[in-house]
Image 1 (cartoon, rainbow, N blue to C red):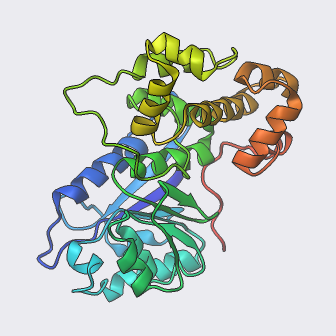
Image 2 (image 1 turned 90 degrees about the vertical axis):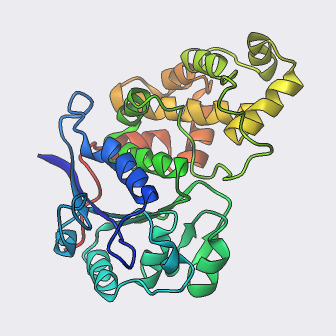
Length: 325
């Protein structure tokens, strides 16, 4: 029994090879979808890798019947227009889309979905350096170069690199729930949930690798104390910074404000509690730090798109949405 079939399409260059970037993205997808985590969920995904040997194990016919199709990236000569997306790939993507598969791109994979018409009428994100070319080539797409990833119901796009991993965890969250996605993120030694509308760019460069993440301990502590009153002043004191410096460092390294970061984590905690407990909404508001039931409903509905009650009633951790027949 599988949580869903994921078909990953690796697009080779004109010589039939793959770039180091392709292998990085394949490793990301394999960590999330290819390694069974049956202690987190009773069933996991079936991963099919389509592409040249030795990394690809299937041909394009493996897209038939896939629940989710992911195109991580395309070679630079396709992204910059020197070469077209292969016709056989375009046809296969159109067929998968027509069959109702969930369609996903990570960074320049959007050019392949764009060539197949999958993104027409949708908002799509790509790394900001590729956004002008994508918008010019496919005017039917609303190109957004500012966010980490987009969720258009059955069509998903990511900005690439770390944002691609955020998008993968977002898919796990939709399929198997916030608790499973959070446990998987912790297992992969990732930070807390990052919402898709986070900006790609930050106000200043990230700290150099030799400099430790000075915010890690205090933000981890905050996750363990979400049920308590947490203010910027309190967190800044714990980080031994002034409130102004703390606010600036969160903006620089997390791409958001401290209060918005807290809100995102509290909504994610509420999602997990709604999925895994039968606590009343009032208690979930308290335990997630969102306070009253009314406050929980307001923030949860604005962030997730449905009320807490509707989310709990509709949540079934049974894998990706059924494909159209």
